[in-house]
Length: 334
Ligand code: PYC
Image (cartoon, rainbow, N blue to C red; front, side, top):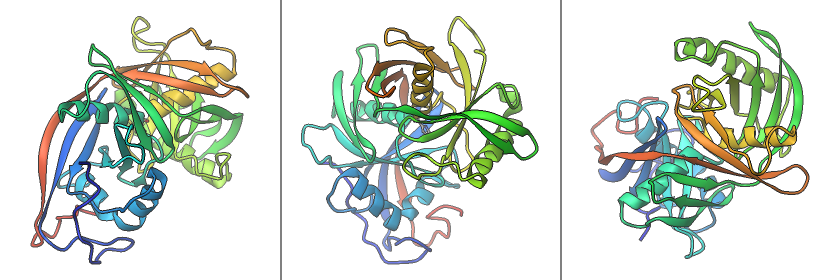
């Protein structure tokens, strides 16, 4: 049986209900190309029944505590992405999932999906082959390959706006594209600090300032959503291994250690829309760490594409989280 069940819920913090009793939450940790994912496999909150979009809304109302308990210090750290394993609505699906990070619930998360697939394999629930995963933005297919890599077929992705000018405080005018790849992205090339780990602080301030500029200018996705990811591109660190290197700022002020699967999907959609990537070509997107996702597109109507993004994830931990009522930081700091 899947989870989404367990903790009763009296109240405490703003915007949430907190469990009262001492409880254990079982998590399995992994990383995908350097980016961590913590999957809750037992002892999570009871969100009732529904599709993943409905469960995500309930999670937002009721389970703020789970995010802080798992992802904030002293147990977690800010870059960690959480995933609540849920009962799928269709029994043929391998799982339902809700992804969340230090700032809230995420729409899509491809690196997390790769981590989830390796977690389900680790638990003995799936083996190699294709698996449907239900997410709040739609059902996606993930293939666990014989060589251990995972290939995720994402939701339809598209460039919504091109050459959008923003005024980034401290940096000046910047041009970028707005695209959907399972999250909303503003994609920048040719502006900002060089994409190197040594420039992490400057890259972070530049991308956060760009996100603020988008908000000030009221530039939104076509569904009215905030553009909450900024992706900066530069030349590859090693042209033999990748075609480009990126830096991705996520909501919550942490950068993606991986090349970001939804960000790679948004990039693929932009490349396709500008005639730079065809259906038979592979795009190798490098991350700031030098890890790589491979992407390809299946064209749809109206310049939209279905992206397929492949990469590697490794399970690296299995833990029982203890929530002790006498611990002032049992639900994390902050
Ligand atoms: O891989 O799609 C992704 C992702 C989104 C946020 C962090 N990683």
